[in-house]
Length: 209
Image 1 (spheres, rainbow, N blue to C red):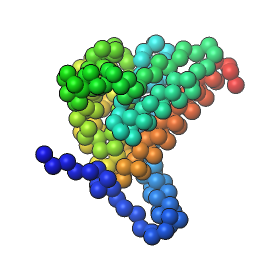
Image 2: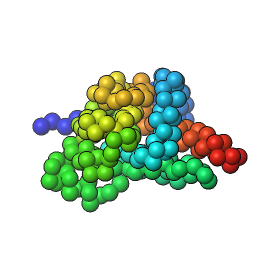
Image 3: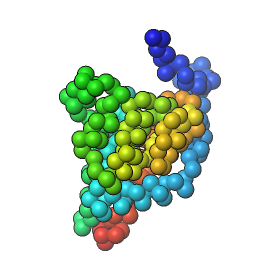
Image 4: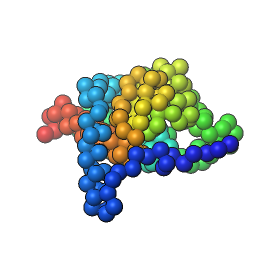
C-alpha cells in the first residue's frame, strides 16, 4: 500500500525569506477564515448552549494536530466557560485516553477508536465535534455515522474540499483552503471564538458581569 504524506498536499506560499513566508501565510489565513459561513456559528452556539442546559455531554475527536486541538479545546470549552449559577459544559476529548485508544485500535482497528468510545459513553442528545482537515479520516467518518445512529448531534470542522465529513455532519463548519497548517489554525480560532462567546453569554445569563 502506498502512503502519501499529507504534507505534500499543502499549498506552498511564495517567499524565500521567513518574513515573506510569514506575510503570505498570515494573509492566506485571513482569506481562509473569511471562507466560513459565519451564519452557522449561531447554530453551533445554540447546540452547545442547549447541551449544557440539558446536562448533555460534548465530545471532541481528531487525529494528529487535530487531536491536539481536541485536547486543548476540551479544556477551554469546559473549564473556560464555567459560570456561577450556570450548568457546566461537560466536555471530553476522545483523543485523550491513550490506553483506551490503543486497546480499541488493537482489538477492533484504528478506524473504530472514536466510534467505539461513543458507544461506551454517549447518549441521545449529546454533541460530537469532529476535527479533520481533509474531512476524510476514516475514524472520524465512522464516529459521525455512529453518532447519528445514536441521535447525537454532530458538528464537523473541515478544510480542503470538506471531504465526506462535510456531507455527513448535521452542522459543517468548513474552511476552504488547501494547507493543513492554515486549516488547523482556522479550527483552533473558531473553537476559541465559540468558547469565548459561550462564556460571555453564560456570564450575562447568570448576572455575573
